[in-house]
Length: 332
Image 1 (cartoon, rainbow, N blue to C red):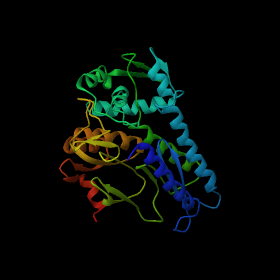
Image 2: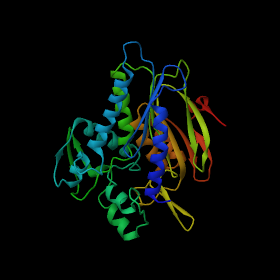
Image 3: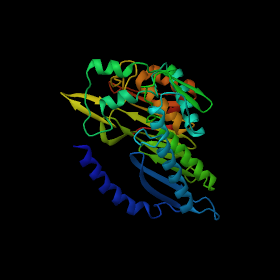
Image 4: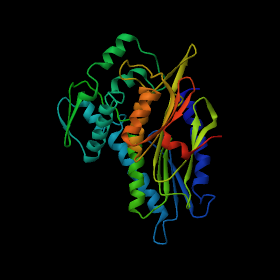
């Protein structure tokens, strides 16, 4: 199915869903709203925060916070800071928010030995996953797109960013959505909300618990879109899954997906999916990508060394998970 047809179908589903999200949820005191932001459907669910809390205003503040992140960090907007950074031939002063996110991304890049990389913009454009006609580039083009990338290719001094090479293109797609979710949660907290969830196409952050019990989060089976692989019971945590089923195309039975290995410029092939539980959605977002590229064992070690938890489905379908996560997982 083409991207345009998928988008049209998504709009039909979304418009139907909005009619439901505009009302109270099924549980007493539960409110939901949904909007399209950052190329996905974002759903905010909140529970009563008290008599003095304006739920509608809190929802509006959360969506506004995410829209601001999109405007500032999207590589597809000509007026974004990311676009200005990509066009810059010399040092560029960025906002405190962008500097903070770059700093986090560079820390994950260093910790993962470059498995997570903020400088894959040219490579991602080459594969074309963001457009209507993704393709398999030739070896020469991939080699050219990999020139100059890596954790050392960006230097951050306060809010001043310097690229090692002027042609380097930054892409925050593997971390900005998680960061936007974190900003939405911060906006809800500032509005007095104590229990809520923000879900941006699978990048999820939980605030508090769900009526005195944990939130129940279903993890999609990577090879069966109609099935749940497992359910996690969590509170006050972020959960992000990176999978080879999210954006992909197939040629002659070979699946080419959007999670690219910075070491060879091709889709990483050691995992089907990686789910990370961490303190923030930005951290979970970046760590899930890094762990997917590293593979089951090295990826899980990275996540755990960071203080997070991981559930990994290897390329052969084998499932492994952090020991501390076992008491929070329920299998179908």
